[in-house]
Length: 98
Image (cartoon, rainbow, N blue to C red; front, side, top):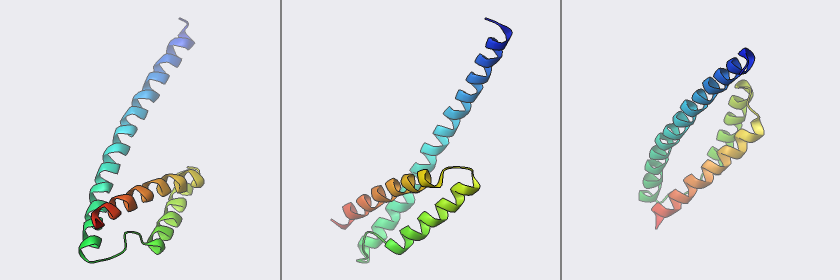
């Protein structure tokens, strides 16, 4: 292996290690987020509130799109990702209503 190939392999390994750490952070952060949204779902069920809050969801999507732009992340990707998360949260809230 040439010096360039050895350096490239080392850089690749470092990038992959960073990606693995960030993936772990994402998963644990999502786990923590869902603990809070499940508590919200229980509160909504206890007080007869609807499982979804369209105004809150719209505000969250706008906030995430802005954060994505500032983080140099595609805002459309952030919007799709948050949309998926919101749908899961609503599904959990509906489960609490049963």
